[in-house]
Length: 177
Image 1: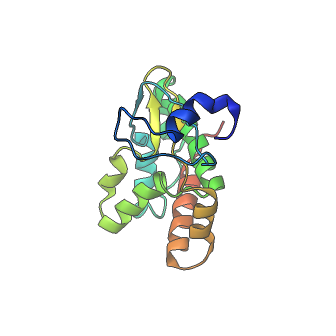
Image 2: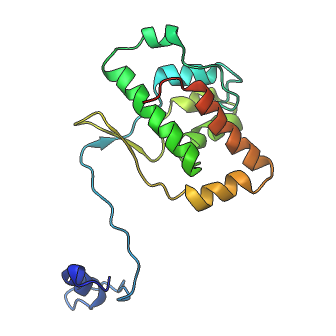
Image 3: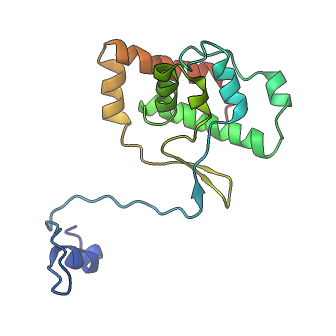
């Protein structure tokens, strides 16, 4: 916050305002995050074709039930559903590369722990669908990189579990951009 570019904002956050009882003053050297606001985002579930393929295995989302094959692809509406599945391939690869365990793996873990495959039908945590463009927005990725890598690669049963979730998603997805 020491940059002059943010001086008007900095001053309002670091100087007491006599008209309020706001006591949450920031240090001038505070590290802050600027996050883009995306209007008209709505929560969204996993595409049905992907979910059905994933459920086809052990029912808990941990083992994978076979790829979304040609027969399933023929059932999809060419524009909206197939486009959404292609966007989901980006999400699957992104979450795998970054070690993100707080989106789809979160659902898979819930389905496994509760022994209730219907959990996979719920809306996906940290994922938004733009009502204006139909684009997926992968938001709030703090459970990736260092945190995700330590969870997935520091050994132990939980590491094997989350690596298995990512493996199942990669083996289930067959449409990549």
